[in-house]
Image (tube, rainbow, N blue to C red; front, side, top):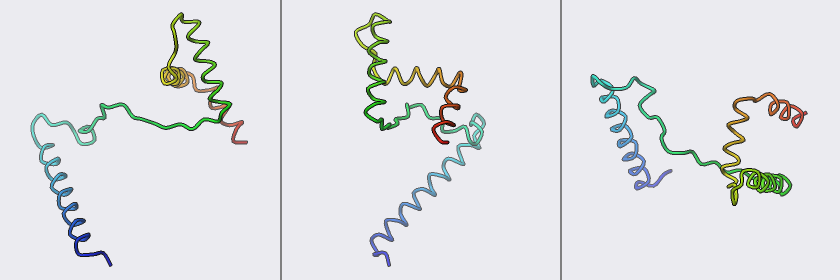
Length: 105
């Protein structure tokens, strides 16, 4: 059985959340309010964590070093390289989907 203090904390959190939801619903009734579902558009970048095998990491760092030489810059950050790879993949996903199929088989 939860302690009285824990129960009170949970009750206070529930009450606070209910008040926040009520306030958000009231804001939607304002004449210039955005429609439901469009009120909280994320503006901050989303951070992900990715574990790579030593071999994949070596391939990525080798590619980034080669890209830096090709571009004539001192270095290409791994995060920039991965972002560019995601954009290319999003535009043409067929090869990636085929690789995923082969790896799952």
